[in-house]
Length: 419
Image 1: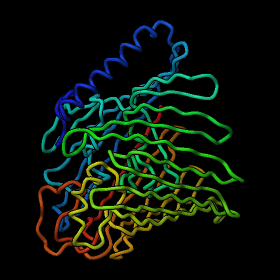
Image 2 (image 1 turned 90 degrees about the horizontal axis):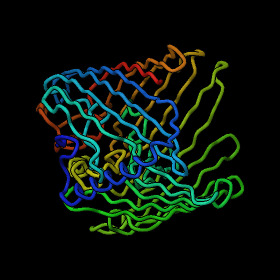
Image 3 (image 1 turned 90 degrees about the vertical axis):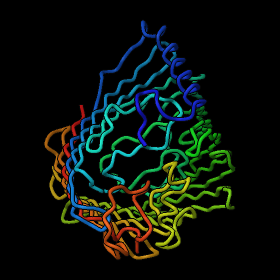
């Protein structure tokens, strides 16, 4: 459910604390405004249109998505600050179902109430909010403290990122250029080249009510050309730990990460590994990335897909896919100095279904590009042909025979402008 207004939604305690911290950030910025040195305002505009054929999940339909992002950062004395505001307008046909990447779905609720809904109707959705609002202060030459809404990424792999405890990447979203910010207090100590110790404390409203807390400590070190890292602590009120490594063997880039989580139902293990290679094909660059994942939170078979889609990890936005075992291959080839072609395949290793997405990107100017693409599900579809007007969170429902087979054919065009 979308929140009404900038201050609406969320637990009362979280709202009060969130508004208090937001007010504190504003008050801290105000006396520094006179000495502030701003970098030029930058931004991003996206205009995308998509259409889907009829499928067992719903009738054919179309949508139009427009997103505007304005960003600024600068310094005020010893303090650095960053602000980013984003608004998204989504126009959709009556009952169109296009999947996760094509819906302006409400993400896991942040702690600070800095976003809201301007219009929330059946065919029109208009949301806006501050995606960044943070202050940073250097402590000497080797440490930094940051408070507020900020980017925190601990991922090592590129697409399946179970080792990222904050905002994992969604491989089914073709339009997200910027990682969502998280509300946190963060301290980093730089211990050497490519080596650091990172501590993050993050409160967040729990999907079932109340609040959950995350307090993690991460160490990263470069050892003989390999970047090794490990983190541990409290993740959503429960113990968790992770290991990750990235490096190269010959011309192959290698990445791997894994986590161990304590949950109400026992210990859950999540792992992902991948390789990438840059080749030359017909005198043009060809990059291939391949990854596999084993996710203990995922569904063991098609009958569990709906249960996983409605689970707590899915509600928090922790899942890249719903299945337990998955593989991904993405190939990008520079067919022309101004154009590149890509083919992404997301495969369920349990039921054999796949989500396939070919694409073509053309550079119209230095900061302007046009992307044409499609998504198609391959494999067994639904057990019934019942058209549902609304899917539960995650886009699945009881009756699917595979994870991706019921996904309709979707075509889209997207114009991106950076300024």
